[in-house]
Amino acid sequence: MPGMNLNPMRFVDHGKGGDASVLKLATMARPQPLADEVLIEVAFAGINRPDIAQRAGLYPPPTDASPVLGLEVAGVIVAIGTEVVRWKIGDAVCALTPGGGYAEFCVAPAAHCLPIPAAMSLCAAAALPENWFTVWGTIAQQGALKRGETLLVHGGSSGIGVAAIQLGKLLGACVLTTVGSAAKAEFCRQLGADAAINYRTDDFVAEVRKNAGSVDVILDMVGGDYLAKNVSLLGFGGRLVQIATLGGSKASLELAQVLMKRLIVTGSTLRRRSREEKSLIAAALEDNIWPAVADGRIRSIVDKVFPIEQAAEAHRLMESSQHMGKIVLAMK
Image 1 (cartoon, rainbow, N blue to C red):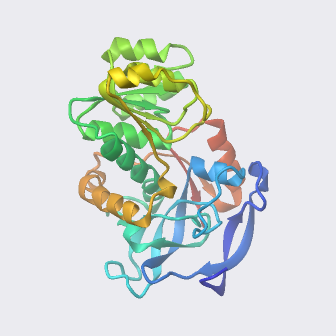
Image 2 (cartoon, rainbow, N blue to C red):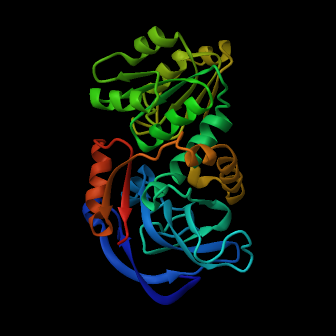
């Protein structure tokens, strides 16, 4: 592979793809940073749904990205590119990566790195980048959530949901969420959600209407038949932001509601955004969110940590949807 040297490192190989059993430890040469990149000795790597999809062969990485799984890491910088000014060797950072996080060493654009607050562990920091880049780009930017508005988050106990609930409250919104169990509902209420609706036992459309009448912004990772339900819940000028289609990528929609309520239906995948866009999000996070991380208003919730040798078990837990918060891999 271009840009590699012969120093070996361990990484999680997903081979030709398949179920979680394909994940095996292997060795490869360490990557080397380009001019605007840093090389991070990875302590922890966060696990995300796109990793599951890539492992299964459903979400190929961009052509210029590492084929190795892993979109977020925390660790210590051990090498810097010739154009890097801000960071130095020895700095502890967390980073959004273009891939390659499930490895002992990983390169990341220097502008996609963020400092780790003094009181935060590397493990907790590894659980931040992918979800916070996503929710800032979707809820704060595309959804333009404002103080006093109402936000509906589907999948509130997921890593994305944990970040979205906290962002909504930080921005001064009323936050409603859907979850799949009573335990997850209580978890989300403890996190700050104003209402948590168990979609397995209750009609979430009826419950949202009972709690809020209508909502201003919806963050949805389900898709499928949720589309029509989401549109029905949006008030005038409402915004639906789609970030995944776990319930199906095809759906029917009554467009008259979109017209009459002047709705915005949009979507986003973080990995396909340009480096420049991600750099702007990183800067916005450092200005607007990192102070709240540092003083404890924003929490990193890690459900379970697996050693790198148990990456398959970590993926199985994510696929079971039994977790509440993030799942993290430890490199040592």
